[in-house]
Length: 372
Image (cartoon, rainbow, N blue to C red; front, side, top):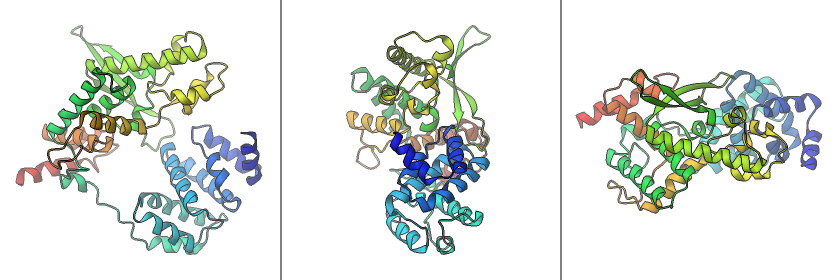
């Protein structure tokens, strides 16, 4: 670790080291990327990233880092010019062009700010690439049986399959909890894995009944201050999620060798990265501030794949194993809301969108389905 830090500091000025420290204090790891990046690129990358850190959300900055890591790992440039961009684009065109879509504005800003490491030819050639961006809502409007919304029957079968898999011990409590939340709330995996023990809420209603809620972080916002939105969930789901939260608290207490007070218990992630936790050198409860102890968003997709495989869930539209993904389940929730007569504003709020610009597509799809 000390060698890694020394190697990185050798590439950076004191000013750039301060920028990196500031960005990483907000849970955005960039030292690993700088370690594999050519020294000639570090100054431009760090200073341009600071520009976005000061003007965009932390989620946006994390996406830039992810895309840049893919770029560096694939082409390992010591200078970014048109030849490097063409090489990378040729590698990505048959795979995942979204990486380059995210980098194009970053490279343009890098050049505009005048930092070293990038040539004007790179910016110019990038402007002319056809990135084959799919029209928003295309899988929804086409009722795509592989990537579009699930049918009501497919969705119901998936819920039954996960409950059965958990009851017979084929599905862990953690996977069951994340799968239920994904399937019934439509929230993004990166939101759900950020849930903490204190985010599980109960409110007493006037009729002596209890309303169960989760306080979900809003990840795709420009604000630096993390915002939350309370979301009601049914008692059956709340009980499973609470069991998972309790399990995470017990694991942390066993690792620490002591019982947590209410304040520190509240900071424990509902979905814990147990392997990372065991790797940390733990002296006190400060480790609960680390983003490393949160499970990765990929646990949701992995859990859904496991459920489909275990239950041998076959789509009646394709004749193949059901392609259950978090994105499809968001489409499904929104489509169901539209069928129930909810307007674009309601759908936007329930999906945690900031505007209705992308939710009207579900209502349009409903109208076109009726016409068909």
